[in-house]
Length: 235
Image (cartoon, rainbow, N blue to C red; front, side, top):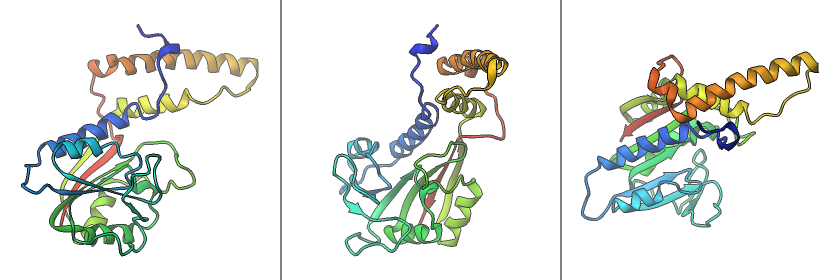
């Protein structure tokens, strides 16, 4: 059994593989075209999907509100503000926007921009967290439901072709424990400290079984809670 001290704690341990797998599946089903599809990664950050997209023979374009560490963002713009002239409209076959919209305040403008950026017949992938802790504060505004994404898409003439809830109760519990174990012990007196340590010991065992996949193999733990929303939209 892996010891607790050797298990790296990561709040993205459960949500990141779920999102990555769905994005990879989406691009794996796209048929190749002669001159390559134009893909825009909106809110690209450090561009984790760039290699995947370019390996598929597609043309990768990136947009973000600020330059990344690699200094290779093509277009510097906020997706929820009027787009600058250098950003081409009606040019992109695919728009990818993963775990970004929770940090976007003005969804009306953002979806208006998505509609303008997509070519007729183009598709868009959006993922947004539903269960996740506050991050990139204070720019963390929403935990949208699938219905919120459908609502804004339809308001801006984008057809919803797929909606999925990613993750199970195990993923939600696992993320809760990952974040909880990153917090320091609070001073709560002798008895409180004892209860805390006892509870932490028990939860550390649960966390260990989750990291190793043992609990997931026993039961799927379907629940009303899920990790992230995945939608595909079409213009």
